[in-house]
Image 1 (cartoon, rainbow, N blue to C red):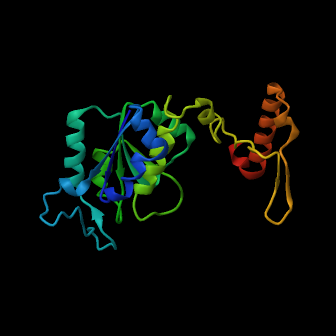
Image 2: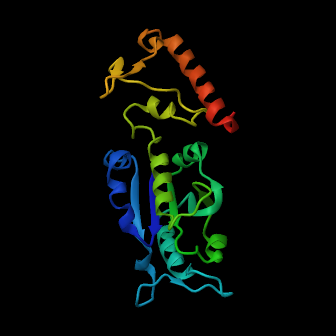
Length: 229
């Protein structure tokens, strides 16, 4: 899989693409992440990619030309399944969408910035508009990073234990069950016990553990996110 991210601040994404799960996926040759500086595609001698909006509105708007030049060049080199624009008014990003996008071969993520992009770009080039939540960020770089991480980690082979990714929250529309590790009982720095690990998890009885896991997932989802049910 290949993901091309178009941004006016590539520095925000440089370390992200080479570290942790995303970096591991690239080292294994399972995914390619390419970050493109939109300023490299403008004909403006000051490398500007934005201008004042018509109508007297506040803020600055990303121009058509540099975006068109960048995406058109990428499209001349390969086919893209989706051109995604990160925007607060887009479709809500969730685990099913991450699953769907992980099956694509090539996608472009265009990071919004300033007051947004010239609407003609959304009409002519963008195939999918995506939001990571009902809030506004300075730019779409963080949204692009969130989406890329969620997509890459479920590509087969990226995570050593694939069952770990499949059992994450939201994969089955339920929140994940509680998890514990050693020691069996933890005594904190004040000498107080934080309790012991549930005995069922120490039983070695796989069927009963899975039953407990489902019960806990259902209970947590009902309590914390009843809308998922």
